[in-house]
Length: 322
Image 1 (cartoon, helix red, strand yellow):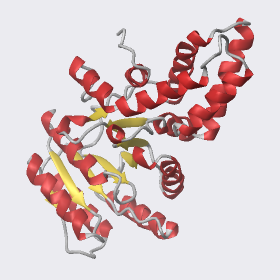
Image 2 (tube, helix red, strand yellow; image 1 turned 45 degrees about the horizontal axis):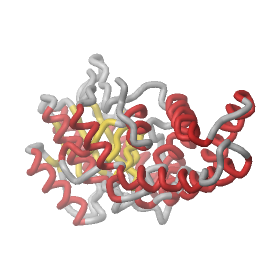
Image 3 (cartoon, rainbow, N blue to C red; image 1 turned 120 degrees about the vertical axis):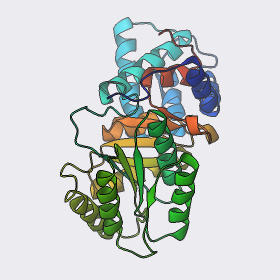
């Protein structure tokens, strides 16, 4: 079952607005990189490398992109600086295509999947994890699905309270226990209740502590093991939520969480509040894990399925041709 698999004009306009800070910073830096130059030469490429690194694309991904452009320049013999935007756009689009074989357009839930479909959401505190869960619950419910939320971040009262508020706001049940309870027990109760009541989707919030990676790994593994007593294939997806405003720190978080558990998708939040949107490109390239959603605002509709073509169009200030 494909959910939210359409990209309306309104969504495109919201994406353009959400990426405006990144786009303006990116285009301005490129303009400075080619100032006074008529062709793409070694100096321009050096300047472009700096542009990409300072745009939080990441060193390894930047070198990959520069090598691609060098190959194009060598093949075409002469490339003008006026062509650089188009060339860079093409290479970034191709890079994203290689790392996301197809646009996820949100969740694609196979009809044969045992219900409930279980999504375990991980990420450090403050990245917008609980808000992302709330917005996903809203979108699932809007699509006509029955949704349950599990408050398995039992170490922070604020996390449980925030999830309860989102549950009330969206109109979906939240399963919770007392503070300090075993997170795996909360997950077990959530899936038991959800399955007994014919739920379609379950979203499990988890603690975001990173100070003890071994503890985090053990905790997430235990939650998964206990959930599988109710739904053998659970979790069907482990979504890592990252905050774009943290720039390169998002890469480090991704490294730690992918080491701690089997992350199968990502959501990158708060793109509207930063000029560091290039982090989406680097994370997609370095971890080869699909970016499923991007957050571009505070509204319920501002968690958008990641569409690589629309993203690149907005980044370079171009209108979609689709």
